[in-house]
Image (cartoon, rainbow, N blue to C red; front, side, top):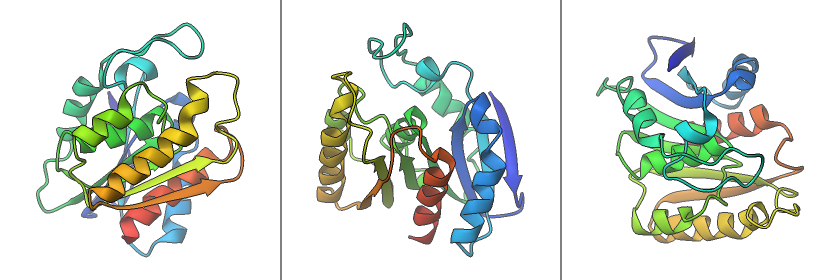
Length: 207
């Protein structure tokens, strides 16, 4: 994967985010929004994902929109990410939007490298995921969750479960003693993704 860097390369606060081609156009603006919401200096490392459904999915699942099924490439993707997180003196936070947000949560169930998880509108409807985090405690100090208040209003029965699954995830993480917040945003899944992601990262940095 191609890795893009933004911000201060000498910073010991490193943000990790999985992005697609569209996100690459707005990541600099996202970083500017983060800077306005925190006093911390940081380095953003953004990894460009080519096959979103395959490379960010922890296990196989049938397609819920379009024709593309979900693969099981998250393990290989995480290996590449962790290869860029070897400085023991740095503090790493992982986050992302949509399926990238789900990947960030899943990653924290596999490693203790990440001090916080910034999951903005994560695909919490992903089959079996709440069971996974119930059975595999996230090895992180804090988790930010958010969802648009219209995201569950869809005719797709799998995706319509996202509100219920999000609330379930919040309860699971909170009961495990992880500092967790769940923020509701105005709009659907496609409303202000860079602003939502920036708020998520700012919160974990500040907490």
